[in-house]
Amino acid sequence: MSTQNPTAVRVYLARVRSALADLPESEVEEILEDVRPHLAEMEAELGDNPKVDALIERLGSPESYAAELRASGGYPPRPADAGEQTTLLKAKTGIGGARFAFWGLVFSVGGFALFGFAAALWVRVEPLLGLLFIASVLAISVVYVARRGVAPIAELPEVIKLRDIVTSFQANRNGKGLAYFRALKPAWWVLCAAVLVIFGLLLVLRDTGAVLLLPLMLLAAAAVVWAGPKLKGDRRLLWLAVPISAFVIGSMLGGAGAAVDLIAKRSYGSGPYGGGYPPNYSDTYGNPQLMYGNQGVDNIYAFDAEGKPLTGIYLYDEEGRPLSTTRYACEKSTGEKRKVGDDNRYPRPRLERGVRDSEGNLNGYNGSRGYCQERTDVPFSAAIPKGAPVPPSAIPQAPPSSSVAPPSNSTQPTR
Image 1 (tube, rainbow, N blue to C red):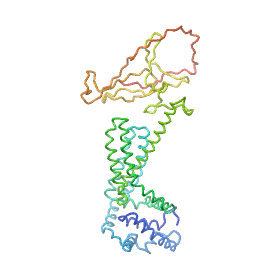
Image 2 (image 1 turned 180 degrees about the vertical axis):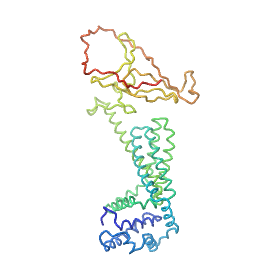
Image 3 (image 1 turned 45 degrees about the vertical axis):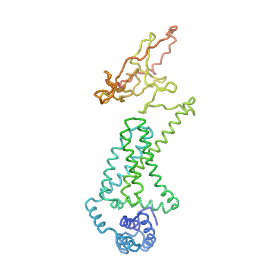
Image 4 (image 1 turned 120 degrees about the vertical axis):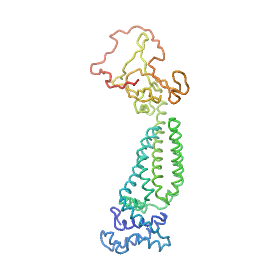
């Protein structure tokens, strides 16, 4: 039987499956496996590409056929109002809500995996803020599933086709191997919970502001341990367990990438460029970082021959490229530092941060804000060695084609 396009048997069986949805999934699969060969033979008797209506004329509606299968197998009848309630809900809402709930789950799975990967790769909280929009879409889908159930979603054409693909894949693979992976499901839910807790603790260690996120991680860990084992009996929990699983998979891949990057940087530091390639040093915003040996340089102070500090200098390399780094300034409302741009103008104001104000109060401004001040003075004095003057002819002159000018759009810190 071809699996390229939906056939009458597959469509008919999909409706039978929906009518048996209240039974355990394993038992439903056994029932369908028993009747599938009989329906395939009947489809062959009806000729090429028979319609579902032809099967209904021979066997009755899929719902009545499911009721006969229940009676012959000794299963309890379906609740009397289930079919009527499903029909009434379809008349009221159509398939729009079911389709939104299904694709909301698909969209959420991709988004949770992507942002989990980014947050773990950089070990930062900022990428997780992107989950707010995705979580709102998922919340609408959860509300629909909680009120309507999964029966309308199971009858969507795209869901039927996906289910047929999965069934065909399972039929063409070793059943023992699939059974082995199913047996590992309890361990997977425990692993998900452990990854969520560890990831939350790492974020708190990296950024104290993430302490507000830790309770959400703990709640998600408890939710996945509770919902995972119940998926077989209540498919509505897919909208809770699957996005969390996707987030865990994404964060595990991102954590592996971060570990590889850390190992690579350490190996580069053990020798001149380690394996032959110089390390790519960058700050938290992805901008190149100035290095002196193995230490990062945040600011540069220049002095003239008399030891007088110079201000407003612009740095370029031998090819005329600006040596730009991230510029920070004080956030007046919170007392924290914030990015205001990047340029190659030095020196930058020094940011003095703490929990005290200028009067020495330990609780900060009004007991609620941190202390941050921009200092433009030079924190040290330089002793310039006195040597023989350099004749002007010994000073190399840059060719006119390589001359550069300070960028006109350099971002300056706000005061």
